Amino acid sequence: MRISVVLPTLHEADTIGPAIVAARAVLGDCEVIVADGGSEDGTPAAARAAGARVIESAGSRAEAMNAGAARAEGEALLFLHADTLLPTGAGDAIRDALATADAGAFRLGFDARPRVWGHLSAGYAQVVGRAYGDQALFLSRAAFERVGGYRPLPIMEDYDLVKRLRRAGPFTIVPLHVRSSARRQRREGELRTCLRVAAIKLLYRVGVPARVLARAYRPVR
Image (cartoon, rainbow, N blue to C red; front, side):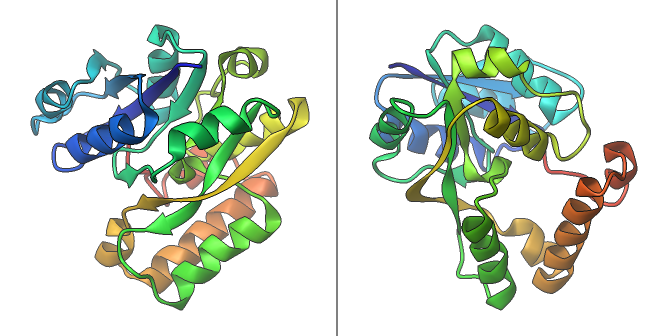
């Protein structure tokens, strides 16, 4: 099963190269597509230098990931954030998981040891079985097409996709941790970021429109 990796980017020149190198190292024969939203910091050049195919995709992160998936040729799709590194064994874990499930994700880890709020956030997601985009969502192409891909939401597009995938078939969390950047927590404060993210997730689940929530939390594309 060949895996196609789709990375949506905007001004990620410092992170995109390591993310691609790490993905290639653990996935084996994979395809890497970077869907860039108009970066002016050298992101496309850095992505090409690391061996990725780059396409231009203005708009939301959801639209970029759909555009990348439309160009992908693999039987499995892996949606990876540019500031997230895959763990050793990721390729085998994905292929094993998709032998019995339609989709899945990894457990969440950080590039620096978080304090209590970071542990609570990652631990809560693991206990309740929720999954979000920073956990490197993966699925079969058939499952992606069956649910209609990402909806063009400005925020919470990952939560929405996982919700529809769970309704359509088996979804699994593999027992390996990705290493995601805690740059927003470092920039804005861990407690503030944790509380704001928790509030946005709760408000979305009770029906507040994504376009309203996006004004309070602009996702890193």
